[in-house]
Image 1 (cartoon, rainbow, N blue to C red):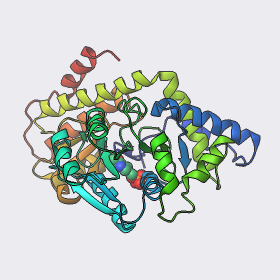
Image 2 (cartoon, helix red, strand yellow; image 1 turned 120 degrees about the vertical axis):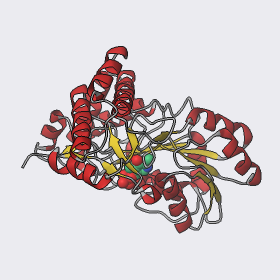
Image 3 (cartoon, protein in one colour; image 1 turned 90 degrees about the horizontal axis):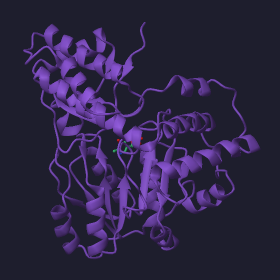
Length: 379
Ligand SMILES: *Cc1c(COP(=O)(O)O)cnc(C)c1O
C-alpha cells in the first residue's frame, strides 16, 4: 500500500535526513556523545525561541510542557486567566482546574483572535491574576493571536505572567520570547520542528523563575528546577527520548541552515497560496487572521464523501474539526516540512474529490491560483 501523505498540524512529515537519523544505533544518555548532541539541541532551541534563557527539553508531548509550566509556577487557589475560543486554549483551563487553580476564561468567539479589549475587562475584574495564558496559533480554528500586543498590554496593566502556548506557532511564525516579554513559552517536537512526537520544549523568564521559587503545587518528574540543573551540565534528570532528541538535532540543524526568517517565509507562502487555491475552487476558509501553520476550511456539502475521497483515493490525511466544529471544518496542515509540490498535490486532490462527489467548482484552477501566489512571494 502507498504511504499516506500527512497534512495534519501535528504530527508532521519528516525529512529523509531526519528519518535516517532515527535509524542509527541508539547511544547512551549519560555518554559524552549524547551530551554533545543535547548541548547543540539546547543552543539551537534558544535560537528558535529567540531567548537567552535555557530551553528545557522534556520527554512528553506539548500538553505535558503546559502542565509542567502550571505546576512549577502556581499554588492552589491562585487565579489564572486564559483565552477561550479554541480547544487548546480550553485545555490549559482544564489542567489548572485539575490542580485547584481558579481558572477564569476570557471569552473569545471561535474563529476570532483574542483582542486587547477582551483581556482588559478580565484583568480589571481580576487584579490578583497570577498569569494570563494565550495560544499563539490556535490549531483547532487556524487563528493567530497577536502575542506582542497582548503581552505588552498585560505587562502595562498587571503583574500577571504572560504564558504562551507556542506549540503550533514556533517555526511557522516569529515568536521572540525575550523581546515580546513572554514569561513562559512552550512547544512540541511533532509540530513545526520536523521531528517525531515525544518531546516538548519549555522556557521561563527571570520573573517566572522567581515565581517558581514560591509555587507550592506538587511536582516531581516535571520539576523544572531539576531540569534546569541538568541543563547546565548538558543532560536531563531522567532518561530522555534519546532517539527523538537525535532526530531533533538533525531537524534543528536543517532549520537553522535554511535560516529562521526563511522558514517563517516558507510557511507564509504555503498559507497564502493554499488560501488562494481554495478560494479559486469555491471553498471557504474559517477564522482570521490565519495562522501560517494550518488552514481551517469549511467542509463542503457531501462532506463525508469529500473526506473519504481525499483519504481513500488520494491518501491525503487532513485533520477534522474539533469539538463543536467537528462537522463544520476540516483542517489542512502545512506546518513543517512541505514544499510547493506537496501543496500543489493537496489542492489537486481537493479539486478531484469535489468533482468525484458531484460538488460545484468555482473554477478548476486552484493550482494556477496557488502558482500565482508562489510566483509573487519571494521565498
Ligand atoms: C498540538 C498542540 C498542543 C499539544 O498537544 P499534544 O498532543 O500534547 O502535543 C497544544 N497546543 C496547541 C496549539 C497544539 O497545536
